[in-house]
Image (cartoon, rainbow, N blue to C red):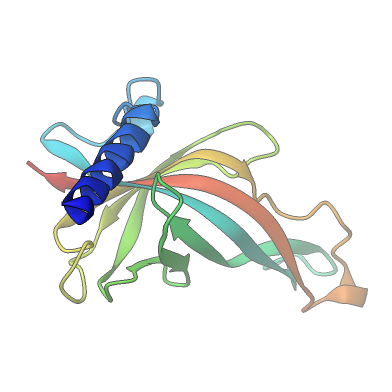
Length: 180
């Protein structure tokens, strides 16, 4: 009897804890620029928050002797669900979102939209067929939203540091869609 009472109290406490958590509304793309909105007929199936680095490399500008620029090399970020649980990673090239269940997806960029001078742009990509069975199976589009940081370094890129890599911190939300 005491065991049943204790279990009941634990269940009630767990339900109360869940009830005290604020309810988060599903992601809405209504305030996004049209260029990065997912077409009708698709629904959000997963929302993630990414935090990591983007690598840039100092390289000579093509066909511009003596001029150099920071060139995007690729991202390396962890993915968390809305409760803060680590569920996968994002890396590239090619741009790859990989879930802890082993499923992963690559994608092709369709559009970008500015998100302030200090942030990488918002982005819409069309997913390629997923590899492996799991959460990424059937993903059709991915949006990059709520970007902070990640732009090319402001430091000098010149002959003296040609080939040097620099990591730049960024955060973003990646929203995954599937066809309805």
